[in-house]
Length: 217
Image (cartoon, rainbow, N blue to C red):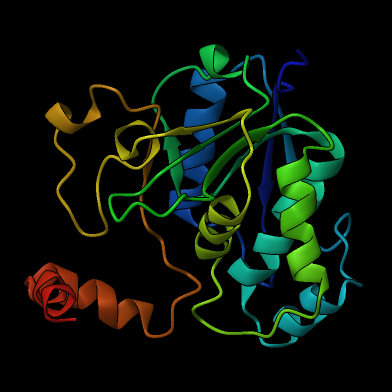
């Protein structure tokens, strides 16, 4: 079986420079994945003419732009995609034997902040087909929801989906103690650049209001 290539793909689009958080996370990739090639995807080397990308870029929905680019790149080249708010805690070498791996969040969605696949994987092709069928913009059309829905429609026996403890051990706003990191390869720092009023959301979390609002939904 073909192994997942030792390449880390990440996306940064828009007119703002990399944040301090993004730089720190990238430093962690270099520390724990020194043999992996890092590839930045931006306006210069990405499929900016794709209709979905054009639509999202006009709206400055950068994370939705990154949603398409990550799948486009992974389908062609394979490797590992990391969100720029993902901190790496240890080597990924023992994850590369499968043809594809993902991790769940605590709400049981399949997350897309950490993705590992071999080139030309059928699941990634199927996800791209969804995007290429004029997917309408909606804040609910996040890539984790789309991926989770696709996995429920069709069986992909070669895909490994890890429990939340491996890549998303701590929920949004939750304290991430060492006890929760026993199995963790990564930590998601939940930058939420794509969410409207993200600064307000973060302020609510600091006051303890956000967890209460989630329980009331």
